[in-house]
Length: 396
Image 1 (tube, rainbow, N blue to C red):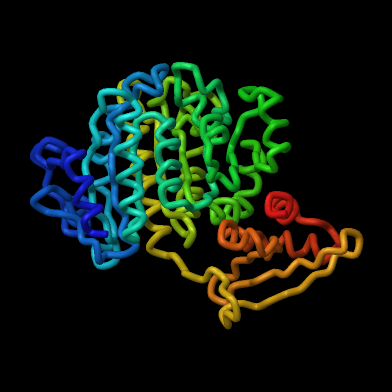
Image 2 (image 1 turned 60 degrees about the horizontal axis):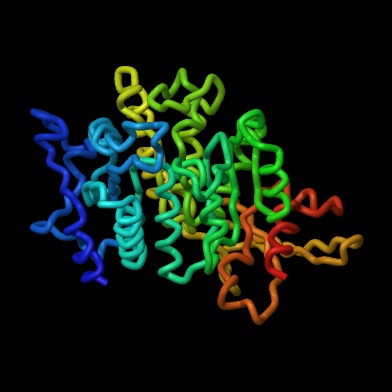
């Protein structure tokens, strides 16, 4: 496994602190003084599990309507390194930046290879882009692992687009859905804005048993967002989901969207998830930023993600686990019995969805669906939780 990490180093330009922030002197508990800068002379430590590894991608060709986003990685680092954390707990390294390949597909190949190697060595890659089409390259890393995945995007649109169009960042989801062999089990969108989305796209989400949550619903039901994010293997965040007044550094920034503290809360939920293995932050554009406001918010989003990782409970239900309380609820109308699990450690909930024995090896990771106490209450009142039913339809 260590050799896999060494193989990807030639594709990266290491971070140089004197160029990133000339003359900067970091305090002992600032991230800039505790981050391990990876290079050929300082290879990654394959023994450090659940270590967060930053990697920047300096390629914005797939997001030509947001030209300039390729310069985001070092600008975000500049503010992220200044933030404070507990040096005795935070395990963080920085691989540096992937430079533009000859073709955009070359950049995708390198990113997929890097994410694949990091996940297989028990690390948590955090990708700073670049355009959001890089999510497709991250997805391809899981194809190499032959792992069926759940994807959550935080985005005002669905990015279904036309896979043949030039602007890849508007069509990467369509590319993922059409890709064969397909390893996408579930897709969830958080924060879409109805007036920016084709009604046919919303209808398609329903037909595919995917989840789409309007901006207003998410803001009013933030606690119920946690199990949605907890179910993800990959979270991809487009900074245009944040309103212009909070994050002006994006050509697609609009008057409506999340507030800074709301998007930071969602990032913390992502970090808390024991299942999540990759986080991506995309579309920050320094050319349109005002006093570095968007880059500062991006840095704080990353900080909140890291803080979530530090507080992971490792309480995913396992067979015969004594760390959970088991509840059985029978629904007379549908003739289904739903088994709920409540963690004694965190009070978080899951529900079990049955699946055919023939599909065990492919879908075993997905039959335990994170849920909320409200789902249990609904079942007790003879109601069918949407999360359970949608997952059941995909498993049978």
